[in-house]
Image: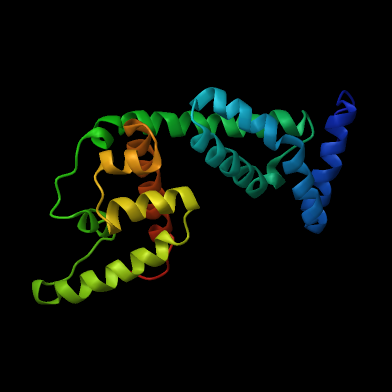
Length: 203
């Protein structure tokens, strides 16, 4: 890698950390890169989203995407420039997707029960005689998936889908605005859907 001679001392420091991470898989180098930019990245994303939970999630996603593509980084420019570009593009994609689903997210879902609404995230080709057994298996699987979520998302899912609280009841229980409850439940369902898609088993 040919280093741009115009890089600042900070950019050169980051370049050496990136090189250590790529060449030797140095975990301390990854950790230091995160420590150097976690706060500034978070506040940039908070300014873009105006939502602390989204900013927190998107910060983690940005580092995940950057570290996965670290071998693509070239020291023609500062690592921070590259990282913040990845983060802002990811945030724009997230906000566009969130805006697209705003109407469906705010529309009440009239399923037979809240638990049905959640387990329907898992596709099923089951026949009628098997539905009761399959539903039980799905609920057990869903509980396992929910356990992998962050605590605040897990709490929301448990209240909504296992205790079958209404949106208003969750809002009162957690002292959150109704719109925040709906937005965070939408985000939690996305996480669950992604976990299920990455499972090797077929359901």
